[in-house]
Length: 101
Image (cartoon, rainbow, N blue to C red; front, side):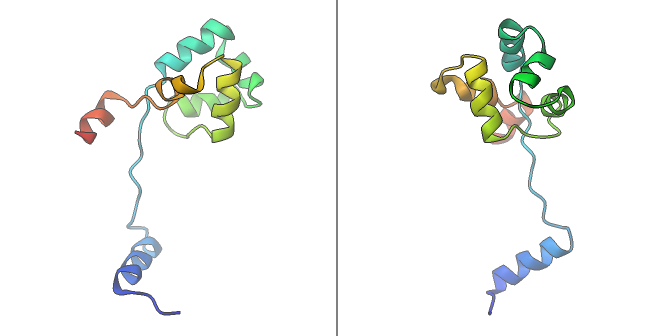
């Protein structure tokens, strides 16, 4: 199989560990408020979506991301309409918003 010059460049960068994706940080304050309003505690919410409190902590610290399944189940548990999902689950931090402009 032949690779183009561009493809070879990216393959080399990835192999050397030099190609990294930028991480997006999200502000989960609105989601956390909704969790407390509906479930009472983050631990209870974690149980409702089949996850651990530790998992949620990593999410809220922007060290991990929620899966599509977690968002689907979480929005159902929290009674979040599909149209409101971006407001709760994809609210970028102030720094991220400034980066985009």
